[in-house]
Amino acid sequence: MRPGRYRLISAASVGLVILAWVAASANGALDANKFPPVQALSAALADLLANGYSGRPFYQQIFASVGRALAGFALAVVIGVPVGIWIGRSRVFDAVMSPFLTFMRPIPPIALVPLFTFYFGIGETSKVTLIFLTAFLYLVVNTASGVKGVPEDLVLAAQSLGLNARQIFFRVIIPAASAQILTGMRISMTLSWTLVVAAELIAAQVGLGFMIMDATTFYRIPYVFIGIITIGLIGLLLEGLLLLAERRLLHWRGK
Amino acid sequence: MSGAAHLSIQNVSRIFRSNGTETVALKAIDFELTPSTIVSLVGPSGCGKSTLLRMAAGFDQATEGQILLNGRPVSRPGPDRGIVFQQPQLFPWLSVRDNVEFGPKMRGVARSDYEEAARRYLHAVGLAEFGSHYPYQLSGGMRQRLQIARVLINEPSVLLMDEPFGALDYQTRLDMQQLLLDLCARYKPTVLFITHDIDEAVFISDRIHVMSRRPGRIVGSFDVPLPRPRQFEAVTAAADFTRLKLDILKLLKG
Image (tube, rainbow over all chains, first blue to last red):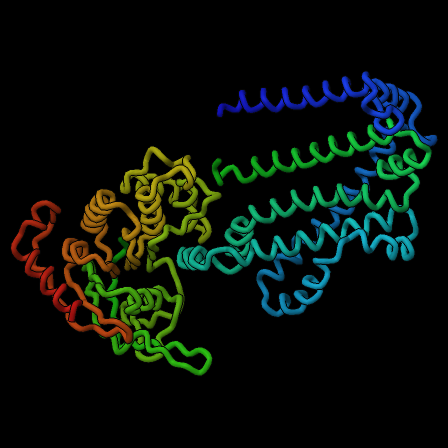
């Protein structure tokens, strides 16, 4: 199928669902108090843009969430990538870290929220730490496996071209592992974003997660919908940006 | 080339030990490669021929015996011995030209020198037009040409080739064999060539050693009495070619 035709069908599909929504609201099939009509959403959005939410402008709610996610993610990249490379290169360090990484991986990060809130309060530290830890675990494992996956013969070829150990590390192993490192970064970015919202649901005073929790409590359902849609759109945007960077940096992988 | 080398394989054995069991991969291999000759090792899979080549490259050490390059024991990898793998080990993030220039550049050769040399060797292997391409854009045969150019630019005194054309289709394989002969006539390296294709071995070699199954030993050695330069059509029609091929086959069937 041509990409143009694919997109056309996708657009028509979305249009049809919105149309069905409008129709169901109009003939009363949907209870407007529980599942608001489309017009109510635009009114809620206009109100959010004009007056903000809970005494703060709407953009501050967004920036609070994005800021936490990016801070935790950036910290995870700065620490997690070098640690992952080290694990990939050293059997000893691998053996040291492996039990903890293996144990931590199946624990849903959300299970740590109460404890982190107890330790660090409901401010920024608890959320950034939680995101950092989750993204870190994912990045370390991906980076280590990327480094371990560098073909032995590629390293031997480099040795026989006369490269020294330092050159082999920086000019062969790191670039050869970069594809998997970048994929790990993209996925842990998405993880960070889902997690920040989940953490804010439980304990926060500002942020999109806080907003949808608070709006539900006070029965302001259109605001909840706007919050969810905003979360989705920002998630797409963040992933799209990293996908773009990945394509640019890894152009040599071909299509 | 900067002077072809004499490679001497002296009574080499290789024993792998793991979990208390010993596997004798190679047993008392002994032969000489005189400068600028092409010597092939023919044998069944798992006969240890790649192990021997890896020891000559300096990736692995003999359990007994030694390998001498111009009288000096081989102890580690180096650009004086160019290795060509069956699966081209290219750097996919580097362009074709950068792949060729990578070795000399990393060793600190002057840019003006290696740029000129890269042009020359890319031309020699027929990739002059593809300098800015990336490996993923090349066919299997072109990747192998690139791997050869990347090795030749180091002006190695020995070429170590591990079934380099084994993964290519028949037509491409014939083209690559002819290319190799042309390059050898021009640069005159000493070549140790591993293959299980008897036609290929007879067509390109000056001398052929036939190896047995594990433990790998040399069970027969043949000089190839065919004149150079060789043309595939003419050589394969010659009576000497067929006779030698059958002798080797008989030995392999053992």
